Image (cartoon, rainbow, N blue to C red; front, side, top):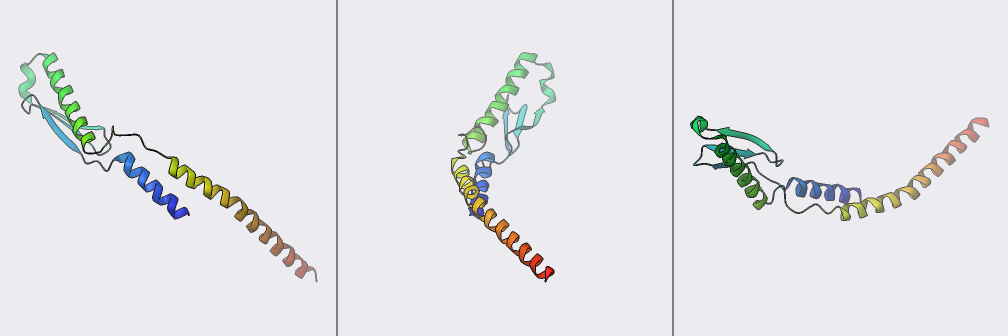
Length: 125
């Protein structure tokens, strides 16, 4: 049963990371490039030196456009920003393990107690 929980946890991790690949997009005719890592965070932002003469508002708009395009592309690939992860299956399996573990632990402790008592009885003979 524990292997089932480990498998479920692996599925949860895969869904959480989305199996996403890094995504690189550009805006303003390639003068602004944004790259998102597989974790969905902005990994790099590259600005062409030719942007120097443009008004800051246009540069900012190009940055926002490039980053949003990267986010949209990563989401389209099934990466971050997708549906939230449903942990109910894993939680149900963990509950089953917990419920099975209590009687098993009681049985183990009882066996250890009996073994200790038998060892003590043999030692006192």
